Amino acid sequence: MQLLASNQEISDEIIGFHAQQAVEKWLKAVLGSRGVEFEYTHDLHRLIAEVTAAVGEFPFDIPQVVALTEHAVPLRYDEILDTEPLDRAATVALVEEVGKWAGAIVILT
Image (cartoon, rainbow, N blue to C red; front, side):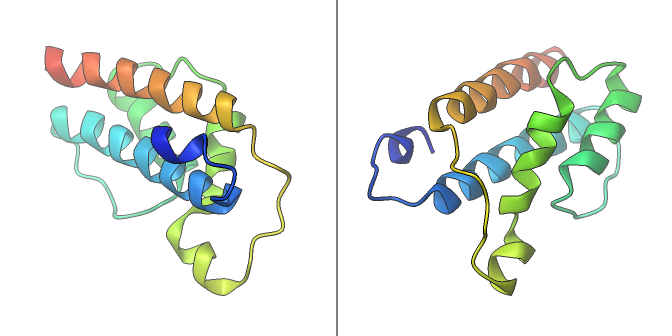
């Protein structure tokens, strides 16, 4: 996602998809590191709730993170997304911060 984000020929939908997938995988890694079984879902809101219950916090702007769900796999097959332009720099920064936070939790577990 980081490499793709700087290429304006690649659509926001593709960048958003990879951002959503990265955050989803980080959240699942946190849950897995805590021994929490989780449903196979792309719903970031549900995963954030489970992570918060497991570790006591999710120190990010939840609506901003949950907004990435619109780029999840099931929605990509229904129709072309009609979304606002993606702030690529902010999205990359958010994914990196979630990754650093989640990585620290996974390593400490």
